[in-house]
Image 1 (cartoon, rainbow, N blue to C red):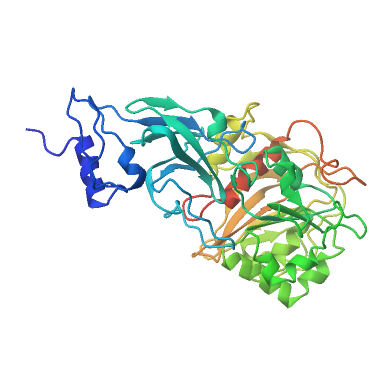
Image 2 (cartoon, one colour):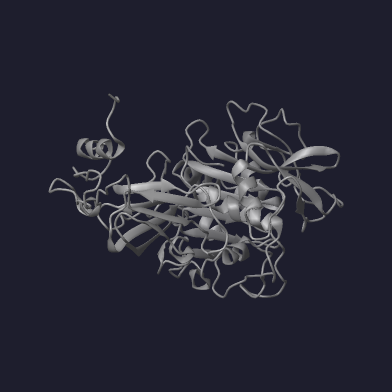
Length: 451
């Protein structure tokens, strides 16, 4: 006699006990027609039919970023028990991977390194709600699910939303800089143009001005100071992007105790901060963040308090391009690059568009136990193997927010043009695909990510 309980009966028992969401279900024995759950079930769990001959009702598909072209790993896919979406918080919050779904799910799965997933025990029907989510990117569609069959889903059903009309988007504040333009990469990954607006409008992406005076890229654009000095305004966003830019405003802003306090509190509450190249001061000048990354500047790495302002901007050319390599810590990024329509060798990533004096990292924290971080990409420069892209969670050991710094960045925008006409044309550069991947890592839950 075999020990244990057949899988289908065990699953039904677990549902009765509340280990799996739903309710008690009948299980058809071999050769019987499908049976539906009894009156003890809840919501869409009542549409889960128990199939004979070991069959199951399944959905298969591939999760894509909003452009529908690039597959995405570690997204959660599920059927909400209520058939409705639970509202997401409007302010930053600590979003932990141990509780990935707002509300209860009948069944859920995560996309693999190739973006593929399979849901089992799916409710059957002509209009079954299916949710695809990565952090605050969340979209629900209705799909037809025949009972006791495996249904292959179309790519357009399993991509993340392009606009708020399609689903939930994180609210993003982007400081348009003098050099790179992450907003152009946001467009290329599929976010709808109508979502890019000035802060007085309702779009998901608000462009602020952090350029040399008089170079605003949208009519009515507000200065970055209006964001960083206003705690309530800053806390209305989930993510803050600080493009590479000169110091027309940053030195004064970082000299303000209120701005420094706002940025740290933003991270403590679950905000996400992204900075590239010359905007490194927004990390290096904050005493709480300075110990995580030591930049090549005027002081030795043994000094973990803020170093001199903007002293890591090297003079003279440092070599363009260089070749980066994805580290062993970042297998998810390596998989992503290999699976693009035009694959990129993760061991030989060409990095271009470097400024003549781009900011170099000397090393990550001297005390990695107290200030842990993750190096995604590294490369040789000035005779030394250096981190090129680093991320860490804040506060250390009990992360709620997340910080990303990259020495390289996107292509420079065209001068004297407004958004989106200043965006470079043509296919994304390899480094822009890396930043695409890291955008979704930055947005994701904490405690099971940074892959």
